[in-house]
Amino acid sequence: MASSTAHHPSVAQQAEIESFQDHLSKSTRILALLGAGLSASSGLPTFRGAGGLWRTHDATDLATPEAFSRNPGLVWQFYSYRRHMALKAKPNPAHYALAELARQKDGFLTLSQNVDGLSPRAKHPEDRLKLLHGSLFDVKCFEFFCNYVERNNYTDPIVPALAIPTSEEDPTTTSALAVRELDISDERVYIPELDYEHLPKCPKCKRGLLRPGVVWFGEALPSGVLSDIDDWMKQKGKVDLIMVIGTSAKVYPAAGYVDAARAKGARVAVFNMDPNDVPASGLYEGDWFFQGDAAQILPEILKPVIGELKEMPDAAAEQDDAVTDG
Ligand code: BV8
Image (cartoon, rainbow, N blue to C red; front, side, top):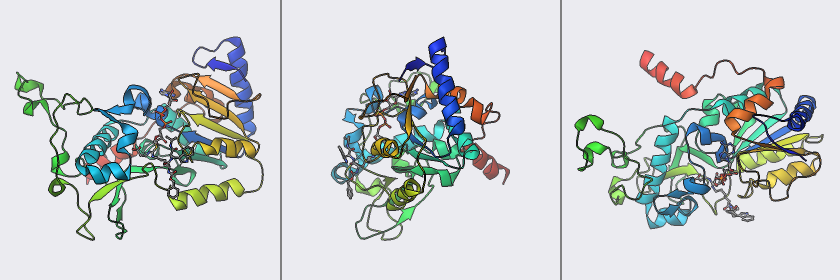
């Protein structure tokens, strides 16, 4: 297994890239496991490193039902901020490259841990994309006995109390001209305590709070998604390849699909900025590690199969146009 900075490949690395491309072109059954690193160059923070801290809170501490029970206002401020940032972000060439590969290869299934909606916006074929951890743009009732679910809610802010404060409200701002959004991920920026009254309510039971439609730690993944993947894995024939893209592969059961694919004969190709971030079971002879920014190296390395990425339509922008054109 040879590692290579794919952007300026040396001869050896070029050989690695070509052996991967050769295997990819011959592969019929392919998996991809996506993580936050895929959306890093779209400007969205990852969970590790600086991005892992939101104000003074570890992002994973806020992603639990317990945190929501304790302080639903704070958890909503966290998720409303991420909805806002994800709506402002744009899919990058790696999202489009994977969407194109899914159009080119019938047997290509993508498993995404990302909840930012960027793969769907890059028009990744829906039947070949499994969102393991839900979406920031789905909401559901927090009440145990209420099954209200609402998909594709892009209202930003979802309630007025969650609007991102601007410098206009910031007494230290001098010139009115420079009105800008304040970065509430910085704990030095004041945000109010929000009580129940100001938070989104369930329109069905009229009692419960709405919560983000993501999978929190300690919660089961969507059963339909798990069974669809199991059916795909059980199809006859080996799995030829799994691409592990922009993920630290530390969260389960998502990370478990690397070894599940390997058990079905798959070779593993990792695309990651950090050479230390390989799946827990390590890399074997015949596997690949491509170091670099996914947005740069993925379109490059997949080119023999997907060609040059021409236009990169953004479903959200088209939706806005449709609305405006009426
Ligand atoms: C459950 C949604 C049980 C919310 C998320 C087995 C062993 C150990 C622990 C467990 C286990 N099984 C279960 C557990 C517990 C837990 C778990 O895995 N804990 C971990 C921390 C050890 N799992 C759970 O709780 C799961 N549920 O087990 O339920 C159950 C079963 C039945 C019935 C009832 C209950 C639920 C897990 C899902 C949690 N929700 N997200 C939200 O987003 O707010 S997880 C969330 O964190 C993400 O979705 C993702 O999965 C994870 C973050 O990982 P990454 O995406 O990889 O991001 P990270 O920042 O870590 O890494 C970024 C990588 O990109 C780095 O490698 C970096 O180098 C690289 N990179 C950066 N820039 C670039 C780049 N690469 C390329 N280009 C760049 N430009």
